[in-house]
Image (tube, rainbow, N blue to C red; front, side, top):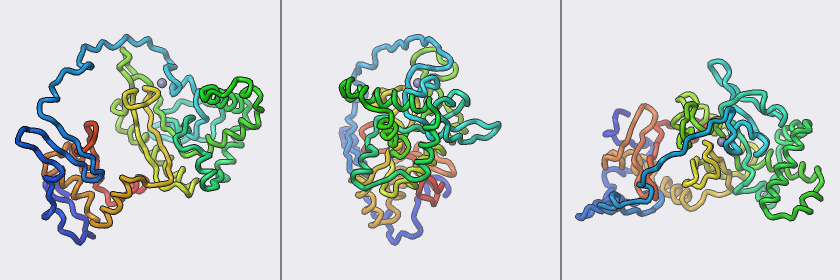
Length: 348
Ligand SMILES: [Zn+2]
């Protein structure tokens, strides 16, 4: 495909969609300058009212970031490399191996400090969809592979201490009385730890909290601070986790991957991480998009890059993908459409 002036058409499509599509329904400038935009895939309508972008905002006031008191190794939050036992046992870690990378699985709690890493894959202690959800609604059982990993982990007494302290901490946060927590025996905690080996809510956590040369508390390590190579590994590990979750739980119908970074986005920690959440349904937005694809197999080209090209909303393009300014989103959004014939992340 040469350049974004060329419109993308699915060769299987039987419709001449581009010619008859009335894009102005979705992106329309009123005589007073108000832009009304509707996201074609979700139906969300957003208005950009002329001049409102210049109104004074609280956060326009001069921001003076605090000087950072550097700690090496970092220990600023529970995702930092000195606080491994603040969060559940890791499933795997990605380690640099000369010029390439390797995955290291099955470390027990007393081995975490032995090997440096770039990213860790760790279950979320506060799952959105819990292991009990899958158990009670689907009679889901941990796979043999997961049970073996759990057994191997529990061979180390430090692992058992880790699990007990972590689950006690979670119970305290849930307001469970202290007497009840201290009465619980170790075997109950070990049994409750199944969630860390067979759950469907995980995180991919980057190593650094702040950039290498950070001077202020604003100098957090962002995904843009990773090298191209590291970024690729960050995605590979995320995709590996998605594949592993679906292979171990046949009731998963959809996996949501997101990177809420920093407090305004709802993240508990400013430390760079992705969340991976398996769910058992597609939800209204996906259901709607499925029926749109049934109507017209070319619909993602029509309302994606073609729509953007005709409205001068293409932001960047290379041989593999097109980045467009997304419309009908609550916050400024860039949408990236792959040019690959493969649809699933693990097929790329
Ligand atoms: Zn941190």
